[in-house]
Length: 323
Length: 258
Image (cartoon, rainbow over all chains, first blue to last red; front, top):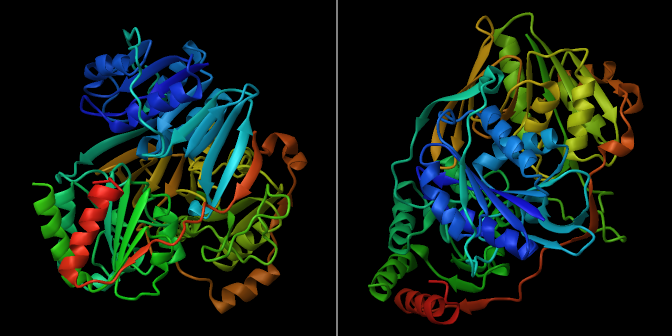
């Protein structure tokens, strides 16, 4: 199989998702020829790392790929996929794939599978496991064409394993498309988040607060624990609707879907819409004063008690343990 | 301005979803179907634009099974000037893009609005796929939208991973809408009564020159199942400091996730 990885980076620092794409590609086909594409300012500096992660060839495009223009990036992905005759194109599930993967798949005459949790090949085709209905059901499907498969992979769902041998990593520069039609949509301003906390959908640890926190000020209890653990803060819809936390932090059916190694739910009752956004988390700890809270049904560790006392104690204990 | 709004029927967010007897589909009889919540933001955006730009018209379009009737009725009750229902059961998001692109051909919209994702298949596929078929730009997941009709362009704001982006696009364009864009209104009683007098135009894939088989997903479903159920977890009822110590010990030493 020929597999093209769309490697995302932040100004020249490769994102963890690129390691997951490489690992998923080699798990799908140990003998796969792996190509990688990195676009945007700083792309050139991730080429060596992509080779170490098994890429036989790396295409990088910097000039003309900023500011971000969805059609310009679509064109680059499609051109490279066609040039290498990719059977599978892998994106990390996130803002980029949600912006252009549908268009890429349509232009390639292929098929899109979003938020995949597992991919495997059985000789006849590719087996795809993905959650639908916001995680209320899991669907297993089989794909054998026509056209390539464009798959977006849910963060933290694929075991990361560095290859024994690096790829050749031949680097080629990619020129930006010159058709002005590809600039019909273009980013004109970007306000970067100044925070140092990890991105919610990529974080290994997510700590969310519910309406029981009672106020925006009290969310400091969540933020303090996040900063000790290097975690991303989240919130339930009830807490967001009450104005305690911004919508960007909302975990659940009408917010973000997270899949961390550890999810800590604080004062969250566990409405089905919230469970949809976090139930695939590997380990779930829930803190709630109501012993019958629905969140406890999915929790590995259910702590019954007052979060206003437990959260500060937890922050203190982690601070000591991680010193 | 000619505005098209795409709507999809989805199972209620609180419905108890179970696999059907074949294990390859969902048991949907008796499950309440709603208009996809994100499509409500799209329709509200259309209503606001029509209010701001007199002479504008709104065409609602929904493609899929019989429940699409619910979407077009909802849109008519909210004030759609016209509605098209494409009867094509079992189609995929990609198939819906083909069906709706064909259904919009005569209307030639300046702006096509839809939700950022359908909360049933969660593919996030439709806006880009439709933009590609109509050969117009697409802008996804906006939380604010301004349309400059004379300048033939639009400006949207959205979150893109951790950043906040401002994005401009020329018209015509496809725009998908996120929560936070507006506060969708509900149909009034008068709207509901009026809706009974109006009808949607009903089309089949054949009417649109499409092969129904080409609208079905190319991923063949083998199983559809509830997510794995967890065995009950451990319950801790200790004084706060002891509880915190036990949580830290368990996470570091037993679960080994910290």
